[in-house]
Length: 484
Image (cartoon, helix red, strand yellow):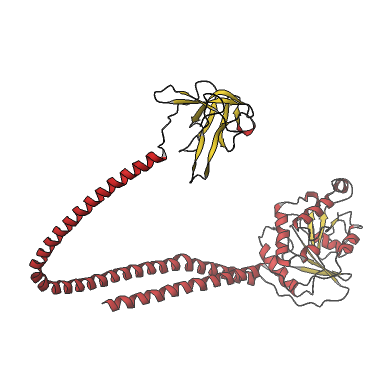
C-alpha cells in the first residue's frame, strides 16, 4: 500500500494460516528498546495498527530485476531513514532461516526480488482453464484404459479357454504336491528352530552353572572354612549374674597404647610403672601381651582387658569374636573404655574405622556408653601441652561428628604414670550407671554366617533358574520327537 509520505509504501502481511500470522500487520523497524541491534542496525518485525509500521522506499537494486527496500524514517521508533533491508546467514537463525534487519550504508543491505501475485479474478480464470484441461485429459485417459482393458480381457478369455482343459488335469496334482512340500518345509523349519532354541537354552544353563553357580559355591565353601576356623578360636565363657551396684567396663584399644597399664591402675597398682601388683601384663611394642580376655574385679568394678587392636599376630577378628561371646553372657556392660596413646592421639582413619566397627556390632548404644582414656599424659610438659592444645575437647568434637551427634559429650579422661590420682575418680564418675545389654550384638562370625545365608539364598535362586531351563529343554526335546 502507499505510505504516509509521498513516494513511499507500506508493506503488510496477507496472512499465513500455518504460521498463525494475521493479515494487515505492517513491516516495522525501530532503533530503540530491544529492537535496537546496535547504532547502525535495527531488528525488523511486523506490527498491527497504524502507529508502529514504517514507510519504505523501493529503489532499484544492484542486480537486474532486483530492488532495495529502505526505511523512510520513523520518529517514534527513532529509526533513521535510508537503512536497507538485510538478511544474513552468519550468524544464522538455523539451517533453513535467517534473521532480518535494516542496516545503514550500502555494503550490508541486500537486493530483493519482488514477485507479482495474481489477482483473485486472474487466479479464478487460470484455475477454471486448468480444471477443463485436466478434465479432458482424464476423459481421454479413461477411454484409453477402457479400450486396453477390453482388449486384454478378450485376449485373456481366449487364452483361458485354450488352457482350461490342460490346467484342469494338472491343477489337482500340483496342489497336492504343494501341500506336501509346504508341510515338509514347515516341519523342517520347526525342527531347526527348536534345535537352535535347545542349544541356546543348554548354553545358557551351562553358563549359569559355570559362571554363577560355581562362583557362589566357591564363596560358600570359603566362608565355611572361615567360620570353622573362627569357631575353633572361640573360648567358652560362663554366664555371669548381673549384681546390683556392680559395674563392668570393657577396655579396648591399640596394642602398646597403655591399655593393660591403665587396667592395673584401676585395680590398685600404685607402683611407678603400674606393672607390679596389677593383674595385667604390660607391653611396650606391637606384640600384645594380652592374647585372651582377662577380667579382674576391684571394689565392685569388673575390669575386662581385651587383646589390643592391630597386634603383630593379626588376630583382630578372633579377639572380637571372643569379646562378643563374653559380652553375651556377662550381664551387661556399663562402659566401653577406649584407651588411646595421648602422646600421639591423632583421630586418624584407622582409629575411626575401629570405632565404626564397634558401632556396627553394638549399635547406637555404643556411643552412649563410650569413655575415652588418653594415656601418657604425665605431669609437666606433656600435661601442659595437652591442656594448651585442648586435645580433650578436640576428641569430643571429632567423636560427636563421627557419631552424627548421638553423643555430643563423650567423656575424655587424660592419665599418666605419675598423674593418675585425679584421673581415676574422673573415670569412675564418667561410667554410666545403666548397663548396655549385649544380647543383640553382631560379632564378626555372625557377619560371616549372614554372608553365608545370603549366598545360600542366591545359590537357591540360581538353582531354580537352572532347573527351570532344564524343564524347558525337556519340553523342547518332546516337541522335536513329535515332529519325527
